[in-house]
Image (cartoon, rainbow, N blue to C red; front, side, top):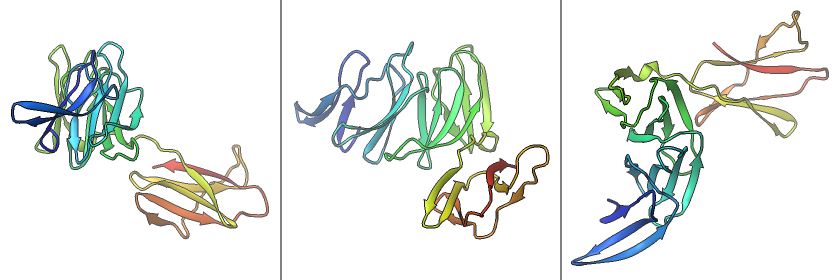
Length: 222
């Protein structure tokens, strides 16, 4: 249900948002942007998040605008996922047993955590209860997971020019340290680049004036 309307979706037919008018119906929009085989998605605000494609070969999670039916983003390599949500986050369990936590945002797919939690085939939607996630595979194996057990996926270090300085940024979630050295190899002495680091939204940012000589940077996870 969305805004008093019904969204119908099938893997073999178009998805359609329908408005009920007494004993009649009216189609609001109809397209093939979201064709779910089974396991319903979730509606958060004006957006629907679901797994598009057949159970045997589908591998995408998609966000569509419920007002227009247009696709906001598509994330591949998530085979036949089951989805639930909590605290404005998506809890996604793939057919192959990978559990993802992602932001429920129409802007882009933003992964917050990922962990391999089950083997075998997983078609049952994850269930959240009492701050724990319950997951199950087709053999009947059931696990209770604490959210603290989720693994923060490594994120790349972003580098941009900010005037005459180099701007480095990295995820605020996780224990990362930006380090630099003027030489590589066994003799390299890495030192923390901490002066001037500030948190901006969900990332740490530091702006560095380049040295006259060569300089190398790395993001190290503690």
